[in-house]
Amino acid sequence: MNKAYSTSIESSRIAHSIGTALDRFIKNNQDEFPYASGELSQLLRDIALASKVVNREVNKAGLIDIMGGIGSTNLAGDQQQKLDVLANIRFTRALTKGGEVCALVSEESESFVDLNNHGQYVIAIDPLDGSSNIDVNVSIGTIFSIYRRKSAPGTPIRSEDILQKGSEQVAAGYILYGSSTMLVYTTGHGVHGFTHETSLGEYFLSHPDMQIPEDGKIYSVNEGLYNSFEPAMKQYLQFCKDSSYTARYIGSLVADFHRNLLKGGVYIYPATSRDARGKLRLIYECNALAYLVEQAGGKASDGRRRILDIDPESLHQRSPFYVGSKNMVEKAESFIQRTAIN
Ligand code: F6P
Image 1 (tube, rainbow, N blue to C red):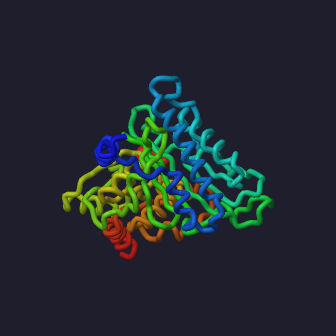
Image 2: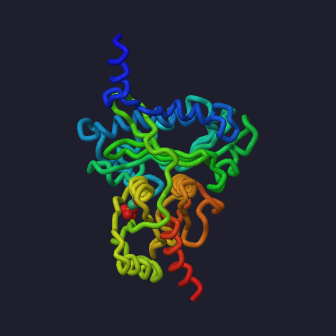
């Protein structure tokens, strides 16, 4: 081939590099993983594969009969949607086949699943978060946390394996099924975002070493619940308005979190008069995002305590959730804590 032609093509836009695929990135960074044995890498690959299947189903949602509810509610009290159930099946299958996972906690199941094997990892997952947005073509997500088991492999799973503090996560992440599909994860060495390239069917590194701005102007709260908020929260919301902040609330935790991670902002699901612990679930919603946000330089608390320090008492325990840019979370906390003392 003509060398000059080949060089000019190589440096032109049509032959631009497609970047680093998720598999290669995981492999290249495997040594950074705690207990680098290859099992955690495989687990992340299994999650990525299941997410591609779910992504395909989410994308076809309007075309085949997988929209709508199945007529029951899940543990979180949300109407279970067909896609919730389908996503749960897809992730459970992918995670249980490989043998790396010994127990699985899911929003969709009342108790944890003991897989009765020698797997070293426990996984907590919300297979499809933001289910009220499924039928209306609005972004939804998957959230996952990975822990190392504490009991000896091959023995029955104990509560100390399942009810671990968020600070004990060895990896966590989410998949956002949005205008593009992204997988964002951390293993405690920064936060990395990958975008799904549909024609190649692969995730490629698009957002290396993500950092959340220290400050921002976006606040994400369901203000429809205003009357059920405690006075301190109402005062904080007034502060947001007086500071000319912008309100952005999708109602899909992953999507609201992701936007604030990129742009700077705070997401709050506070205590309400109906539930002093708010709505969100500590083990499979808050912990993963708290780990990610801290890795990105942000903050997550329940208004008073660091989320990652909370000792869980039960599988589906709720927690108020304040997460996002460090200064914004601290400002919101200052309102909550001031009132507690007075
Ligand atoms: O799982 C909970 C969830 O669907 C989150 O994704 C979302 O942020 C929140 O609930 C929305 O709750 P609400 O409809 O009460 O604002």
